[in-house]
Image (tube, rainbow, N blue to C red):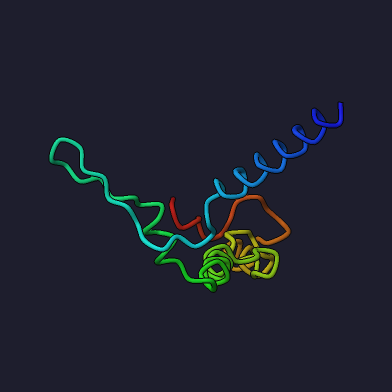
Length: 108
């Protein structure tokens, strides 16, 4: 019985050592190019990891923020919304008295 449990313990220790040895390293030392039938197939994942910069994620986030600004801080006329001043200019002297504008909209 003792021999069986000792053997089982030894086997588990050996298997855990193999599992640790089989795990890939975080930083690959070099990339492997595979050649099949005369055509080379580089490992693009490995190359991308080697070329990546730790600050690249922060730069990507700043670029996204610049491309997608917060619209709640923009003026209504920048968003294409009607403002009282623009409506007053368009309606002219009929502002508040008629539904027909004195000056037609730009597209009419």
